[in-house]
Image (tube, rainbow, N blue to C red; front, top):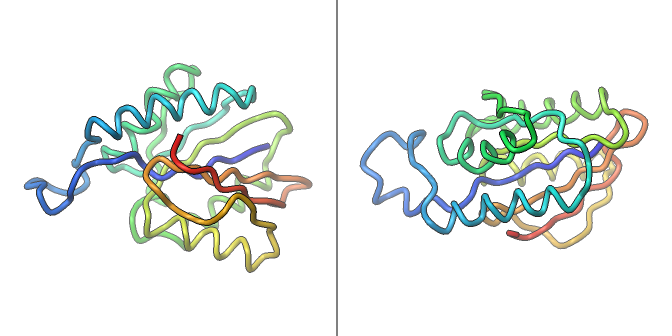
Length: 158
């Protein structure tokens, strides 16, 4: 199984947004990034079995169309919301434990969560490659084996 830990696409300046931040949508760049993300996933050739997303509109807009295209609607997962890094790490570890070869699970979260999860995985002894980062619409590709995450590879924004 492969797990993709994706940061949401570009959603403009949060300080210029007048509503609740959870409702802040993707901007034009973020919409393009979501389309490119779908292409990057298609190139992997793996069966998408699950799409989980933070409840933030920008996260749902980043992975929602991808999930619909693969017939797997995005599920809102509170453990992926801002400030929930410990919960996200636990979720990733749990998903790895139920892995099926040749499948793909996609998770969409935030810039304060993803680096903490990667740090936790590195502490577990997971190998890292591809650089480090958490740019808009970037992907951490997490490879599993025997119910554990074995390697994490960073892919910059598609």
